[in-house]
Image (cartoon, rainbow, N blue to C red; front, side):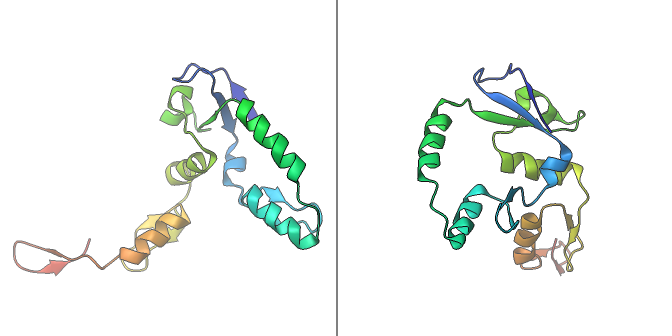
Length: 148
């Protein structure tokens, strides 16, 4: 569900979009009409469609580019009313940012490090942490070595 608010933020031409929590958590929102395979990005869907030997959507891309030039910039607010980013003045600038914000701040932390037992709600955060966990050492005043 998408609803729109009037904007009082720094850019009066911005369109403020409020997405539902369900929409923010969906992973494959772009679906191929031919084989029903889902993709996270429209670009990936367009590349996939080529495997079906469909003509490229050149004329649609040209009209989409002209529409994008005329369309107001979109900013996204958090659906949680108690969150600071629920206020249109503090809206986030892109869809990826609002999705990661919502997962990090308002969702269960499902990925856990098996070395230090830290938990993460966003898989990319967990993967980045795993690459460096346990590799940096610190020394205590007593001389013993430890990791954080």
